[in-house]
Image (tube, rainbow, N blue to C red; front, side, top):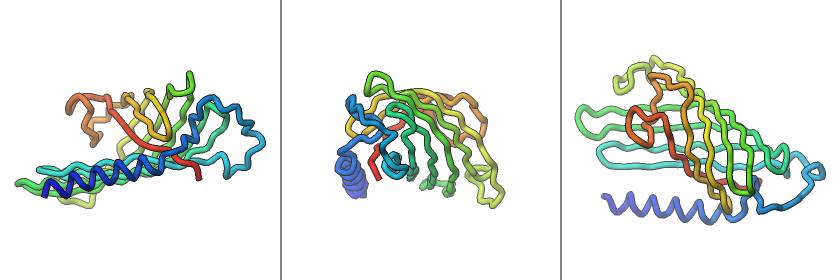
Length: 186
């Protein structure tokens, strides 16, 4: 069973590497005049995906659509879906979904400053079957590195909402998150 999960994870990594051959948002000092580009030519897409399996199953997909305002500055929108299942007693599953708005600025060709506001819909009593949902705001700021369509960022949650469903990089009380993703031109 674990071999299938490993094969799935490797397939997703290869998929992202194949589709991230050109980095539309951060482009090696290209002095392209964006004023000559059409609206469509300034758009880029990408996103993040995650999967973990075992005692807990956690699958996330979060596509995004960005717009290059200038060579170094972009803004965009994203959607998020996260499926969570506890596979040991007491078992339960939940879906988390929502949207986000972000802004990015590039320094020194590869260093990325990032700010994002997410609004997620979660079950009010996480782990207890219910149709009652709660909106949770998450305000992320941070930065990272981008190269050849791949990006790696370290983000800090400014809001710290008590119902934030994310597990921080450094444990359940951490408000720091590590995010990896990719970007491609439309």
